[in-house]
Length: 319
Image 1 (cartoon, rainbow, N blue to C red):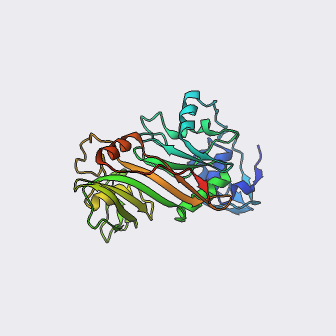
Image 2 (image 1 turned 135 degrees about the vertical axis):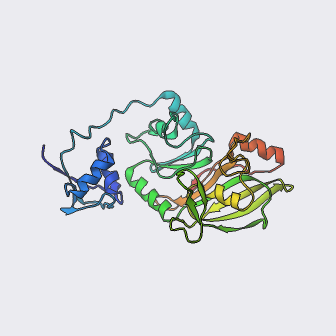
């Protein structure tokens, strides 16, 4: 077989070369993509290109023979039960995006021992489209709330750029153990992975070359004496476990946090009380998309127990 040349379409603007290839050749391994780039077999407009090269509409991508290495995977019809479960999460949809209220305890993607996850449900959210929706950001398994999906590759690239560029305004609600002093302020505390653990984050030393800037604004919305408080959290950066580590560093760990709370590493009797309440982001078709999500059942019960009065979520809208 001979090499082929494919043209990048408008809907694929700003996508990385390796991700563009995997959309056209879903079974193509990343290691092979990297090797094809290093050896010059993959070219963009006749020039060598790195795997992370971002593409523009109209560019010509030379693709070497790949059919024997990257046969398209079989795509089954969506499982009806998973499709119904996914549809119940939908807060909003239009031609470009779908907004979900992700439940507590549902992983966004699979992993060792994880067979039930959101990524597996996305075929049930195609609606009138052939393409399955695409993830453009993440929430931890035990964090509930607003999650945005892109309905086309071009929209996915635009939304991913918005998240990278900090054009997305995020508001979380949490119940914490204790009452922060002062009741509102900014946490500016660098973070880094700790030791050999890739799933645990800690405040970083000032001279740590691996430190990442992390900033969170917080505000106390209500409190139950000095034992518990309802906080509004607005992360200005997007680091792994940022809100959980920042709250613990403030002396008010999030209720139910087994990893960073006072009982860690002992299991907590409470689920994690962290909820992505609101997102405001540039809509790919213009304007701003604002979406809010109501609290999950375990947080509603806690709010009722402590007498916290949470307003109902407003319907998602473009403004």
